[in-house]
Amino acid sequence: MRELNNTDYWIDTHCHLNLPDFLPDQAAVIDRARQANVRRIIVPGIDPESSETAKKMAEAYPAVFFAVGVHPNESADWDDSRLQDLKILATHPKCVAVGEIGLDFYREFCPPAQQLRSLHAQLELAEEIGKPVILHCRQAFEVLWPVLQDWHRHHSKNIGVLHAFEESPEAAAEVTAQGFYVGIGGAYTYKKKKHLSEVLKTVSLDKILLETDSPYLTPVPYRGQRNEPMYIPLIAEKVASTRNISTEALSEIVRENNLRLFGNL
Image (cartoon, rainbow, N blue to C red):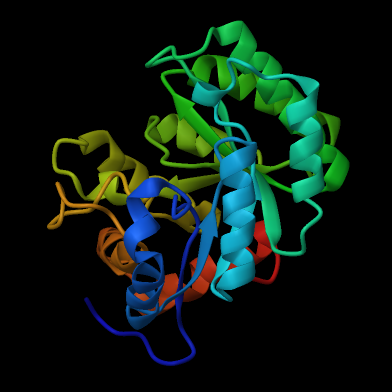
């Protein structure tokens, strides 16, 4: 992995450091990220408890920022008390977004109607507090995208990132044209994900964010091992080589993208 100069650095915009997978070596993971020039990490919540854990991590580590949210697979027992818990956490100065929220029709851990109830409530929260959203979408784009379009039409500042984006190049063009960002992660290094190569070739670079989704979706050549933020440069190299630009130029682009969406981290 090529080293950047001291003025360039990477941001991992989606990393589940608050999951048990990282409890034994949390500090070491953050230090390895720093050595790879990954100087900022955004940790999303998947429920109020993990959001609280993410907040505590952000307080303990200068490199860590966080988001608050209830994941669609965790929304079966959604009620208004959960929204109040998230609202309180979201007042923290290192909370940069509402997420991870969205729809997941792949595993169906939760009925779609309940997922939608949770999603709508959290989109309203994001609008109320003026923060972007971090979105999960699995086999649900045809339902999720119209919801997001309505939300965005209500207020032009209502935007976010579709993390771990794996839809078509046409879908990427549509969501980015509306001001949303797409999260580029380890799956873009997998040979069998040929349509993602097409996304990389055509997506607007000023609408991409880099992420690991650690501990999941480890990039090649470390696929099969636990993912970590230190692998962001591998994802960056894939993007840079596909678009025929330097990693230094890409670093500047994605930092500006992060600044526009999440503010100054």
